[in-house]
Amino acid sequence: MKKAITSLFAVMALMLALSPATSAREEHPEIRQALQALRDARVHIAEAKHDFHGHRADALRATDEAIRQLEICMQYD
Image (cartoon, rainbow, N blue to C red; front, side, top):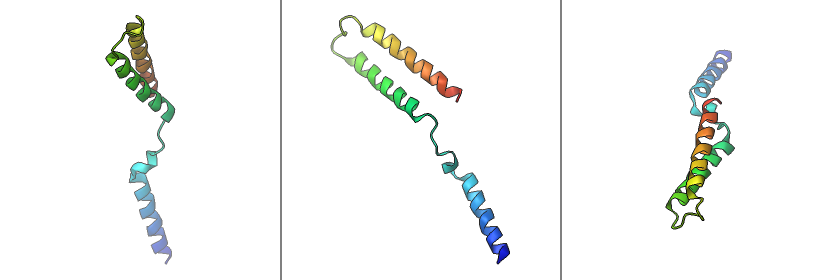
């Protein structure tokens, strides 16, 4: 009986170690959501029928830079 319980725990530990769920906790979900929101906003700004009273180019540059900075942050997590 003791050997069976030990074997069961060993199998469970192995399954847990090999399971993708062991790293299931997403790192910085808020930053990932912000990245997606910025990418969506960039598409909206770029495809808009007007230039936002001359601010489209600046808004696109700022959005690109914000995306770039957040992507860099995620690399050093």
